[in-house]
Length: 455
Ligand SMILES: Nc1ncnc2c1ncn2[C@@H]1O[C@H](COP(=O)(O)OP(=O)(O)OP(=O)(O)O)[C@@H](O)[C@H]1O
Ligand SMILES: [Mg+2]
Image (cartoon, rainbow, N blue to C red; front, side, top):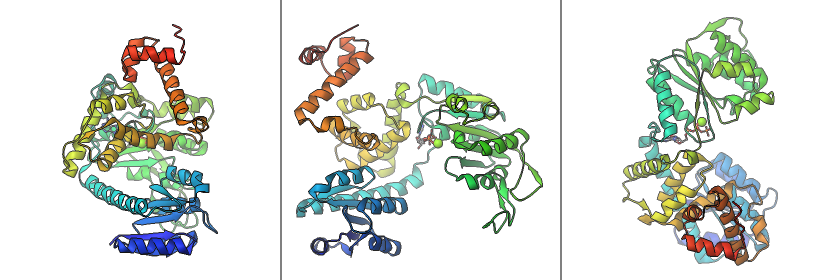
């Protein structure tokens, strides 16, 4: 039986919701404020939280933050009064499933609850499948950039040379690092990853080099560091540009000599480790701004691999879409779904700021959330936009909010046309193609909006 927690300070709403949901055979617990609600989550399994955004003691947004931080799998539906819709929208951007406006409509409430629970179940099922089958190992893409990357992988894998992988978020840097390891003579040895950005400054040294018993408070036992664990294998220093200057100095010495001391010990340890590192920072800028040591950069960067963003990889996009669709289908026993022509065009146009990770998540999401066998452009828009809105700086919609819908549409249309014209050097037929319009149609819109064509 699915368990729902209602957090609302109005007893009336709690009681009505409880009755209605129990009639639908959900099991329901209630709490009058966030603090009590969070205490319940600590003790009981809950599938869904219905959360009032306006609460005494601890505001709904803060409660949501805590839930998402500690129980990322639990879906949250926000209830808000008309006056607090802004907060509800904010909550959705922070990961709430949806919001309901007061006065609550019974039907809408039940549908939203049903969908949220179904979404949560599908997500879980999907996660399990993924754990079994969705192994992230194959590198897809036969475009120019991937060809070059593949040949560097093949050439460098056999040597022990250090490799620095550069490129934006989600472009596959980690995947490439693992591939190099797999093709190297160290394949049977460990592949040890350190996320330099995720480890607090005070712990990074012991994380990398290990520590002796009693080296600092809480060091109850001696512990091996990542350099030691990677012996005879590969050490992957991820987000390497996020290390502090003092850690960089220590790492520099360790990779130069492949020798280091555990924290709290004088004894040097030597290891046989191959170093691969990666960053999504523009490393030249980091060096110029004195945030990254140039000497460390030269040490790490014996062989550079630059991984371009997805939007610059041409047909790789289609191959990746086909690959992820096929993989999803195979793992979920779903019927074959395809993207309509218009949907495909839209996906091609979309800038994919989160690159391949975003594409992969999008495909998973759209497969879960739509029943269409031919996935429409509208469905894609819905799920792409959601993400774009979530990533926008606050205020991304603001310039439109004072306008009527028609005016806003016109404004957006005008701006998009100008942008596409510029991108295509004011070549009307190419811009029209990009926009999915007939050239004659584009002509009339150019006239309508009084856009000047200055070549
Ligand atoms: N060429 C590719 N073929 C198939 N899957 C890919 C490819 N590139 C990336 N992926 C998948 O996309 C996701 C993101 O890749 P990965 O974690 O390697 O990116 P990253 O560059 O390390 O990202 P970040 O900078 O955010 O750490 C992973 O699930 C990975 O398997
Ligand atoms: Mg990574």
